[in-house]
Length: 152
Image (cartoon, rainbow, N blue to C red; front, side, top):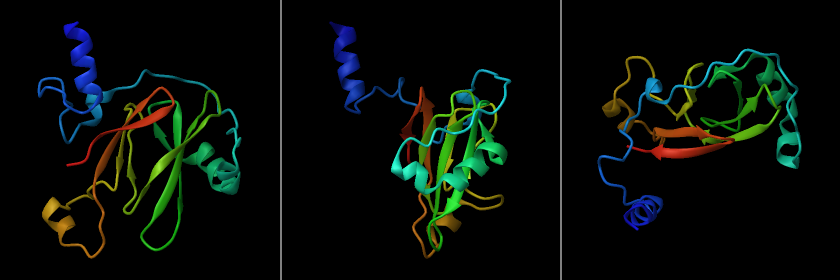
């Protein structure tokens, strides 16, 4: 019964501090299992994925590595805006990424995706003084879904 109550509280966002993820999280806290293999072509199985097929295909071949077996495809969607997708190089599954204003932060051995990360030498105070809103948000790859873990 106690376990069920804890699961329910966690599901609605009332996790005890000891169970909550640290914010901001680190790439090393969410390590991924190593995987070596070839590139399966991306599955463009929805109209939205087919609309950006060229950028998704290019990203599947040469995008940044993410969580070892994924590649990050990124394209522009207007001034100060980027859209992206994660391509599973093992299955070809394409996972839409959240829109970003200042790019994405990924590491090959981590399941953590940072949307609009701080650039080298930039501070939070610098970011708050910008003319555009570019909040830093953190997502964790769980299965074939991105789940937001925190937004400081």
